[in-house]
Image 1: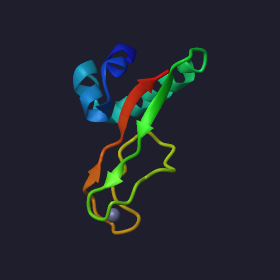
Image 2: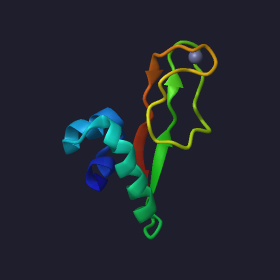
Image 3: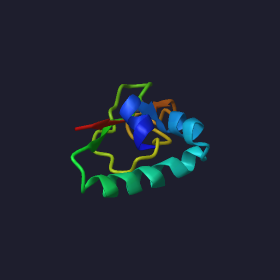
Length: 87
Ligand SMILES: [Zn+2]
């Protein structure tokens, strides 16, 4: 997972395909990764999810999963968060 994230920004769906795990299990792996990175000089950067209906950005979201609906306009077309590794 580390190598994939070093190569480029990825969504949880991308990671699911690359790692052969279910998309809903990706966030647990990412959370584990965040904990193990505390001892290194790399950090997981999260480009927050964004509502495609009204442009609302889920900037304060702590969970690493894709939100199911927008709290502002209730649209369910949400652009997934994008993960990458940064020094
Ligand atoms: Zn919205």
